[in-house]
Image 1 (cartoon, rainbow, N blue to C red):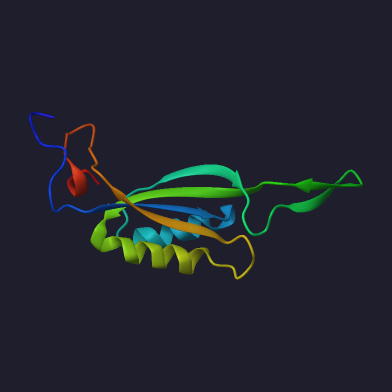
Image 2: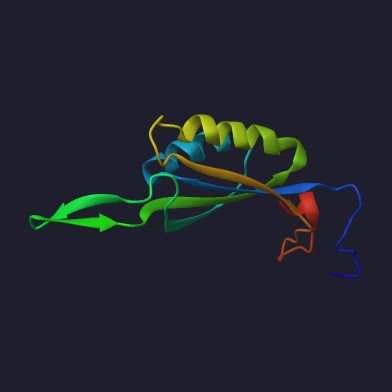
Amino acid sequence: MSGRQLHTKGINVKLIIAAIKPFKLEEVREALTAIGVRGMMVTEIKGFGSQSGHTEIYRGAEYAVNFVPKVRLEIVVPDNLSDSVVETIAKTAKTDKIGDGKIFVLDVGHAVRVRTGEINDDAL
């Protein structure tokens, strides 16, 4: 990284992790793009929370589904954009039904763009 320090004082970057219902992904992506989010990582996951799974019928037999499909979004943004991102995800992903998801916000120690060596908010 050509001698640059990885930790630059005063640069605040946040990692926002959201678990949402899969059918809400495209709508959430479009809403985030509209407020200036330039990228995200998306993973298909399974999980459970308050809904504790559910039952389904397959070939006439009822069985328990302990984990439900979700989509995990990971978005790294400058601190000044994090509240808007959280509000946008919460508003757009909401269906008013159990299992709408969760959002977590974490501090990022540092970020590096591999191609250029840019750091922190410049790496986003």
